[in-house]
Image (tube, rainbow, N blue to C red):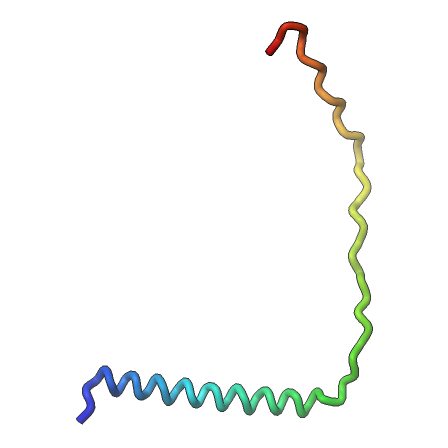
Length: 68
């Protein structure tokens, strides 16, 4: 009789195989259903940045003479 670790690994492997088969069937069904859709033109709908509501602050005054 198999020990529990081997049995769990066997079940996990079988579950992965079933998931792959299910995924393949779903993809085939999807492609069959949507295969008649033609390519569409991609349109750029990016908006320009909003205008600034207030002017930028003035630059800081230069440092006084002798300041390092």
